[in-house]
Structure formats: C-alpha cells, structure tokens
Amino acid sequence: MLLEMKHASKTFRASRGSGPVHAVKDATLQARPGEFVAIVGESGSGKSTLARMLLGLIPASSGGIELDGVLLAGMSRSELRHYRRSVQAVLQDPAGSLNPRKTVRRAIGEIVRLHRIASGRAAVDEKVMQVLRLVGFDQAETVLDRYPHEVSGGQRQRVLIARAIVLDPKIIVADEAVSALDASVKAGVLRLMNDLKERLGIGYVFITHDLPVVKKVADYVYVMKSGEIVEEGTKEKIFSDPDHPYTKTLLAASPVLEVIDQR
Ligand SMILES: Nc1ncnc2c1ncn2[C@@H]1O[C@H](COP(=O)(O)OP(=O)(O)OP(=O)(O)O)[C@@H](O)[C@H]1O
Image 1 (cartoon, rainbow, N blue to C red):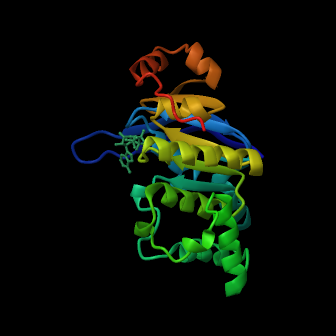
Image 2: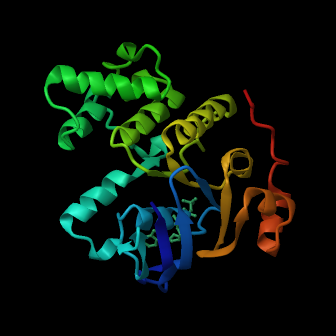
C-alpha cells in the first residue's frame, strides 16, 4: 500500500484585514505501512493543515492525495470507507479527541459497532479488551469503565491509539501525538508506536516540532518551513548531513537532542 500526497497546496481565503494564507505549498510525500515518516517544522509551518488534508478532513486547493494511485477527491463511497479505515488519525489528546462523557469501553466499542467489526455486547467487549491489551493495558478490564479524566495522560494517548488500531489501519497520521506528555511517558508511547510498527506493520506519518522524538523514531524525515517541504531524507542523512540552511538552523536550535529513555 502506498499513500501519497502529490503537489498538494492549501490556501485559506483572505479574512478581513489580511490576505490569503498559503498554509501548504506544493507538498509531495509518500508513506507506507511499516515505515515511520516524520514531518518536522516549527509552529505555523503548515503541519496540521497537511495532516488534515491527508486525513481527508479538508480538501486540497490544488494537487491531491492518492491511495494506491486512486485520488482521494474522486473516491466512491466504498473506496472512501476503505480509505478511512486504512488511514487513521491519532491527535494530541488535549485537543479533545476523547469525549469526556464516554467511558473507554464506549469510546472504542462504538467504533467496533459502527464498522461492524463485532456485534453483541460480549463480542464487542472482547474486541475492546483485545485492542487495549495490544496497546499495553495488561489488565484491560480495569480501564474499561473509566472516563478520560480518570486515566493518566499517557494512558489516554494509549486509548486513542487503541481506538485507531481497532480498525486495522495500515497508516496512522499522528499530529503532535506525544508533544504534551512528560519525557518518560512520551518515551513509553513512542515505544508502543514502534512496537505496533514492528508487530502489526503499521506505518506512521508523524507530525511534530520535537526533533529529539524524530531522532528516536523516524525512518524518513520531511522538513517543513512556511508551508513548503524544504528538505527530505533518511533520518541519518537529515541529522548528520542536512543540506538546507533551515534544517541546519532547526538542528542547531534543538535542545541538543535530549536523550530520550531508551528502555
Ligand atoms: N482554517 C484556517 N483558516 C485560515 N488560516 C488557517 C486555518 N488553519 C490554519 N491556518 C493558517 O495556516 C498556517 C499554517 O497553520 P498550521 O496549523 O497548519 O501550522 P502548524 O505547523 O501545524 O502549526 P502548529 O504547530 O502551531 O499547529 C498558519 O498561518 C495558520 O494561521
């Protein structure tokens, strides 16, 4: 499977007193199952807009997204359903990704029902537990009836990952998915994502401003500046031999790649 963004641009219309915003300009990238692709750039560089286009939440102004050569904008309903299952989102939890009024059981169970992965209370519960175990809740039954505010930030992020992988996606688009977490919790969630890559062959488009995280997990890196992808390459190349002056500035400004717990 191949997910591609081809020459995609997004321009937001002018609002009163200001001109149009060219949030993403002519972006081309590729993502595959089993590969950790990072998109790195400063705040305002257009990363979230790019993620929203990849997830089909907003249309591109020009260019487009393709899954195995089929243009997202031209997909039939069943192709679109396949796309939405194959390409899942994990967003930053403080963005309110989990409804505070739904228990973990309900937040994941309703996806199971909606997509007819299982039906009947016992079968749905079993599926929910299975996916919770996959994301590291060894005693899944202890979190089933908790509300989002009753679990820790790292656990909430795991629940969000569980909710994404229950659909058996091939690629997860993660926008600042670990940015709000403390270093040790962050390391745990990254380990989990890496583990899911190895065990289930999930690929990631991992969007972040956090270079130490990129250094730890990415296979391939795209660097964004002012809406444009200014450089791309393997992690090794980007970190040891960057070409673009902006990449060099980013690396120099990074808090010398604090060592993230490797356990
Ligand atoms: N709906 C919108 N309408 C108008 N302008 C927008 C809209 N969404 C984003 N923008 C603008 O597009 C530019 C890129 O924003 P975007 O959120 O994609 O950047 P980002 O790299 O994700 O930044 P951050 O890390 O701060 O979220 C910004 O100038 C932003 O103000």
